[in-house]
Image (cartoon, rainbow over all chains, first blue to last red; front, side):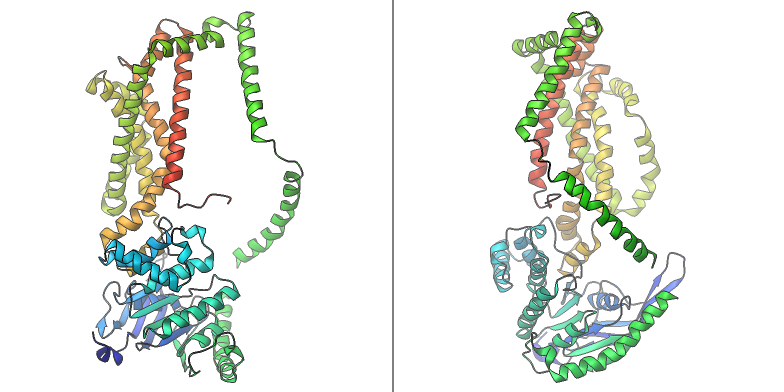
Length: 272
Length: 284
């Protein structure tokens, strides 16, 4: 597909998507209900919402790992059937293969696409240099820090040059400082790429700082889109100072007002 | 809700227990490894010495218990004359074949049943039945089927090794981390790729962790098989010695087996450490 063709076709489009699970007791449970989501190429969209609101379900439907029970998921105009070949996924948990070295983990996507071993390794080294792990290519994942593992995951996901990046709270397990560094690096890599990103987080600061659009989901079950906010903060952004920007503060207050209500609902439901 | 209360209760309890434990462990420095070796030798000498003295004094009946010195002489005789080596070689061969065939079958069937739900459900009761069968009772039928040669011992060892590997593979393949599979799928893995890069390596960790047990059982299978009926092998030598009330011979056979298995285990340790080098060292 050429770039002119893709420019106005959504990279990801969820159309009234509902996901229903059958509970072990035989009942049914709606994770999400009637979700509409449109992500244009080159846009960075964050999804925020209280715990258990089905954020990951939304991502899994876009990835093709889960088919919606109702509605349709489309990617670049075509229905998502099976795994979405144009997307990479960064999981919340560690998803590196523990028995492969950093280099082998990063080059895996290329190897499986039939790229030669040498070529794949060269490309993987280029990516490792980009994420600052050049000296660690022979390490195994357990020998790396949490931040280094995330860097490896980023390289692993980006090396296959996907048009869409799906990120499920990728930095939630990191400490605050490492997380800010990783956010900065992510923006750096993304800015020059023209890729669509769907970024899931429960951290509103992170969502606003990174995104072009923040989508707020309601408390689960049967969660739906409560509101959307365009984030027009100028790019490139300096993430270390952006939190003091008056526009940021204003946006934060506005979105947090809504998010707080949803969080309160989640707590009320749990206490009941 | 309940989990948070449990955790909240457990936390102070755990921290209350920890300080005395660590303070008890720290001031007392541990015995150095060399000194420990010395103590171990001392203990050995004490036990063997007591055995020897009590035997010579007539407190222990040497007909049933022999003497460490006599056993030592018997072992030395067997080694010096070369008598034991062909037997040892036979036993090790049987164990090796049993290990290879048992592991191979366990791998293939475990993999198949773990991947094909229908087969797993079909075979489950039968697998349980055969696993419940005390394997020793199979020895007579194998002797009838395969004769006194090494084949019957290999078959016997296979039935021991197979189930260990089989259950480990079954468990290993089924407990592959779903996130790893999803991640590989998103990176473009086909079914074949998934097996090659994710399922097999994951299952292999389970097999390797059962390596010690399955190697041990392969040797057990060989020796017990020989004991019950054979023309050669360490088990046969022990059975022969027992037949002529040669207690030294029985003990010497035991001793040689013990040493050999110890060395085999050492080798397995090395192999395991190499193959599972990507795994975090526990406690590090």
